[in-house]
Image 1 (cartoon, rainbow, N blue to C red):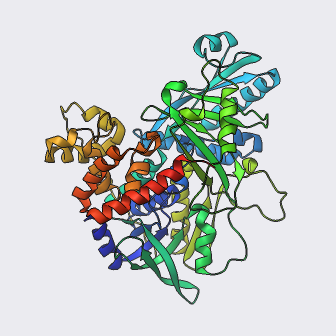
Image 2: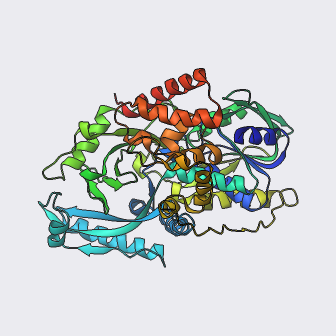
Image 3: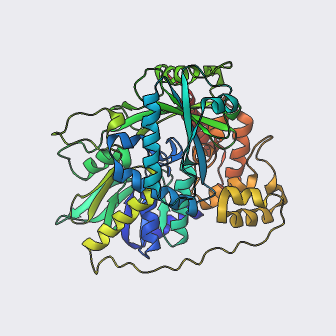
Length: 526
């Protein structure tokens, strides 16, 4: 089995780099390490992309609103990293027009015009168009279902959208294909330290019989909002490093909102914040987000009725005719932004204005932490982290050039080939090989499903899906569109796990019970 191979490898390899934390930041570090020929392993106490990296706003962007806080360097980096991701992951990172109507004030329109012009300048030479101004008359023709009272015009500009969890898992898969080791459900328990240097990391497997002791030259914490939790396992910390903020999103049918652009709307409270309605995959639309301070549990983040009402009231204020109600909500999700705590000497800031930048610091001679940052900048964060390690250990951490052989995709006349390639990029070759095993693998997993059996097998064999929730929520979007619990869907997916991983009846029932708990948490609000 795929997982057993990685466990055996972890027990018998002396690594250069051990990365704790399998979100997008850890994934980026893992890929960069593997690309430099380093022996690298990445672990996570839950599934890869379990936390923030599957609960984001699904946007790849520079961060237009951060210009008002003069975070110019961060926006510049984000815009240029956006261009890199568009080129390297075209099947997962898609160009996306954004429409911003402006109400009430000509001064506001001028302010946005200046900000968007600066955004274009910082983006430099880009594959996407510059922003354009559109008149009230154009808006009334093109966007008939939004409020036209007090309209002063608007703007169309471009950023990108993604499937954050799939992006994280594909980046990890790339590292594995270059020789790296990746194990989810593997929790760091104890750091064996001598003379200010970690000699090994004792890890407890959260699945059957998978405990390991990892020996590595350097250890990296890339645990996001769990940074304080992990560092306190290492030794008691003198301060709290993280001060996360909470953002919730609701998911509705894509038929209720514009499908050709992200609709950006001011919030009902007039607090200067905006919500966006983002057309996503599987005819879904993601509406978000809130931005509030958070100090409760990190593993189960509940959505409240007040947060739902805040989003619905803000959106409905700007819609004419058909309003969006709680009955339209297919699912909700809540995530935490891994914001760094501000220095005590600085004035306390609202969570929405605090920096989204990141920091790297050393805990001892061979244990480094990276925390903060944005989804868009994960590759540059990974590069900077690995480069700092290489510079600290000349002669001990020795990168080497790993040639990228690329993938020569065969010309396939299969009717699904083009669709699968657009969705999976070079991984289409692996899925086509699975289809060759059995002609029935081209069938939908269940009636009206947008997923075929071969896709589900691919996620299990090549992208570490070992739990029902891994597949339903982070490898596919089935959870997001399953408004009501559906035993037929669940049983169809479980049959594939039984075939691929040998689940018995007891394991299958346990998986369904665990997923039902998670599904209730995702869909319900207090």
